[in-house]
Every structure is written in structure tokens, then in C-alpha cells.
Image (cartoon, rainbow, N blue to C red; front, side, top):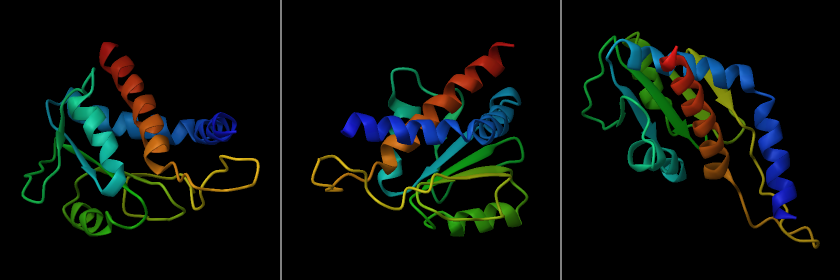
Length: 159
């Protein structure tokens, strides 16, 4: 049952392929211009940060965003949040005219990022025949999106 539910979730994300590609394109700009891809992950979304920095194949030019990080015009920022945890940072980046992308696990909307993706995972997924919903796969979905972005960036940089 879990596999079926996760397959459905991943297919739903594939429906946002164009937005995922836009995120990859925006982040690749930093790698091409010798800037930094700052990853600002909140809560369980830090799983993406771990994959991007410490994974078997780290993301080119990626660094963990910290409150004291200096972000320049050649850099890009990728904010990952459950819902609105990244809003303060988004506001500051927008005010400074720093291009950034934002991914939210739950239903949410923001007009501040250049590219925004809300996955709409507001409820858990069924894992049993009784209809129980003990798993809320925010991090799994974010990792799926991240790995798609990572593959796209590698292809872009290879061209």
C-alpha cells in the first residue's frame, strides 16, 4: 500500500516537471557563473541539504545557507520548507533582488520567488487497509524533487 501511495505522489510531482526544470535552470546559473547555490532547508526538509552536501554525488556549487551567509548577485538560493518557515528569508532575498527558488511541501503560495513549487502534501498517505495515515512524506517528496533538479543541473552543465 505504501509503495502505491508513494508512486502516486511521485507521479503527481512529475506533473510539475516544467516548474522543476525552471528551478534547475535558476540554480544552474550560480554554478555556471562560479557562484554558490545556497540551500536553506527548514525542519525535515534538511534531508535535501544532507543529500546535496554530504550525498554520494554532492550538488555542484552547493553550500548550506546560514543566517550569516553572504549572498551575492552571482549566487542563487533554494529555500525548502514545510509551509511558511522560509518566508522571512524569502522577503529579505526579494528585497535584495537575489534570485531564488522555493519549494513548500504543503499547500502554500508565494509570489516572492522567481520559481515557486508547492507540493500540496497536506495530509498523510495511507499505509494500511484500515485507512490509517501515519506517514506524511514531506522529506521524501522533497528529495525526489531535489534529485530531479540535480540530474537536470548535471545535464545543463555538461552542455
